[in-house]
Amino acid sequence: MQMIHLSIGLPKMMAYDDQKQMNTGICKASTEEAYLTKDGFIGDGVADLKHHGGPDRAVCIYPAEHYPFWEQEFQTVLPSAAFGENITATHMLEKDVHIGDIFRLGDAVIQITQGRVPCSTISKRTRLPHLLPRIVETGFTGYLCRVLEEGQVRADSAITLLEPHPQQVSVLFGNEIYFHRQKDLEGLEKLLAVEELADQWRKPLIRRLEKLISPTT
Image (tube, rainbow, N blue to C red; front, top):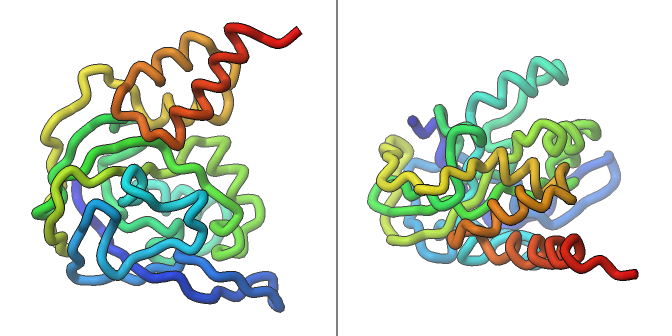
């Protein structure tokens, strides 16, 4: 595992579709170091507090291996942190990391809580309207983490797996259940059995499970 980019940025106006503008925190810039708190990196932020941010979504990680995949598919060159992630890292694919896994990130300690739910801002920033549905289709969403121990993170900081979660429910499996297999009762129960799952996923998944168990007539 290796960090390729450490990126932060506060919300600002972004132009898209030629004449339109929106306030967003997706346009992050590489930095040499930043202090990570329970609420996220100092100097980083989100504009849409309803759908982004919060203690369970303090850090966003995106696998570096997806960049050449998307660039080849869409015949383009993506900027760094194109998906609004804080950490672009190698060997941390959604299929290989698990909800509840704990990592040391520089002086801080983080824990994976959920797959990322991508929004249309990604397509607006990259000017690739078909990118968003492809992210959902492939499950190449990246993922979010809570901060267990605050600390300084540097661009050359190591990422080390401290505690693999015993239930081994991968982020990719979670994405499959959340986005595609919405009536998979066994899958829902398996995902909900992970206590470390973020509430932002747990609550809608519980409602979905309840509907499957006791459908309205």
